Length: 177
Image 1 (cartoon, rainbow, N blue to C red):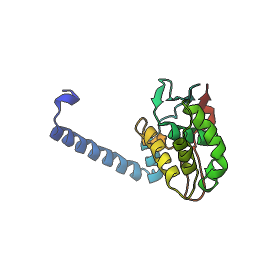
Image 2 (tube, one colour):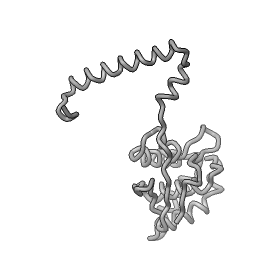
Image 3 (cartoon, rainbow, N blue to C red):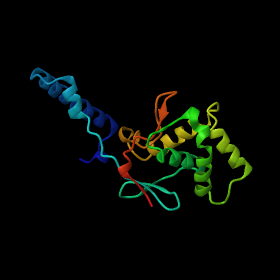
Image 4 (spheres, helix red, strand yellow):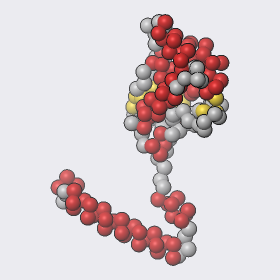
């Protein structure tokens, strides 16, 4: 019988049986002296990190299969700014990066920067506005729709409120073409 031939009720019964078997095995491991932490580490298998490639025309690809990560131009420019700063950036210091972000955005958006585009850069680098948080949320969504949450966190911008925010992906996995 294949998975497609099994209806949902049968699947649920099978899942319940398997869960009970796993619980019994975990209990046996505990009886033999294995700690919760050791058992958890056995069950938690993290996927390996994928290579990130930035093409000449600033397209972003993940892995050897070159799955493209789609972002609108300003979101992509913010991502590339943070990727260029492995030490991270404190949001309150974003005005210091306005010129650099403008340069990146003008390269990502080759049809030129309108007044509206320049205003968007002003907004995203203004720490008193929420624009940077919105861009970071879009970056996070771009990655979490492609890869598992367990590794996606290495690819998007994160950090504690008021402190340095950055991308934790080891830079040896990043290739700029």
